[in-house]
Length: 243
Image (cartoon, rainbow, N blue to C red; front, side):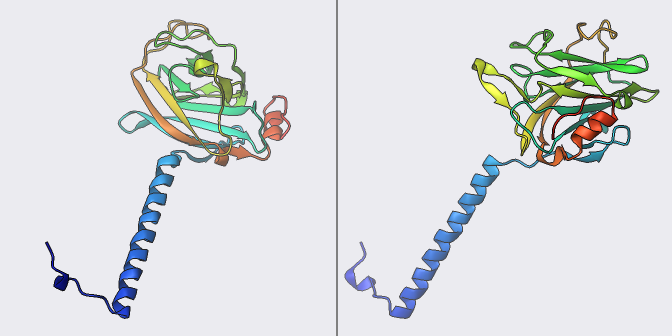
């Protein structure tokens, strides 16, 4: 045990230094805690800007790797002004060896709208699905897709599909919870890939094989806003939406 003689009183200058060190340590600790909190609550987007020359839309794009060095492009565009049921334009571009590509709008196979698409002749097919279990997803009528012809085709190397979706950004999730995707931030997406085509590629209700690859990312919706969204819909042969 220390004796009284081992404790010495600090002079005023020494006390000031100790006080300054304590304050600096406390302030630094608060900064570290704040940064850690922000990092835990906000994740950076994985998508980037892409202007599509076929349709004119400015998309946010994510390249989903299904093989080493080979990717499927997932692109989203939305209006500058949104409500709880806002539409989006979705575009998927894939190499010709992709049998089918899928998108989970809520980042999971279950309890959110699913979009499966594949090449068919000189065009492409979209199938809207939804499932509550890990099985072949049944057809889902809660999300409606309207093709944009200029951005939907198949050639020798790639296939591409573009559509306006109503019902993809708002839906009923698990436990009947109402879900609306964040139009002003990032949304977690998931993709699926198979190298095998569906059994009847001309039909959007056909069965398709189990995916071989899946992954997840954060898609930036705030940067995907198009001030001329409605005009671009009209230009591409669809009814315009009020921005």
